[in-house]
Image (cartoon, rainbow, N blue to C red):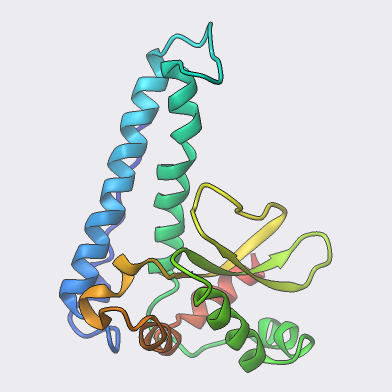
Length: 192
């Protein structure tokens, strides 16, 4: 089964405050590259000889080692684009969960701080073990992704997400991101 890139053109044309069409188009192109690479790896794995995998080198081993890069890169980008849209509708259930942990502003401040840890991803999740909301920073999408989590909100803090519009001003981009959160989508993920 080949994966198909989703279309997020509805985010262009001024739909997002502080995001130019040029910035979005470049980001969409990068995302489509992950989809293409994921399909390429899947095709190669379907016919690769898996009888002699090893740590030093083997085509099958290398494909398996790199498979999570485009897989997670594709789907983290989809979650990111889908949680953009400046929808302020936050469900009462999610709001209650946030209030139980200090409130929405406290959680968003922690998400911002996580995003400033470096290039990578900042995530707001619900932990399956304790049922609480957590924020995480992951430097690369194929390393350190926490398990046992429902991913609720994804903030791409790699430079490609903001360099066209903000240069090296990551904090300004993060502030613009916060103004463009689709809380309806985040609430839907929380309810699921």
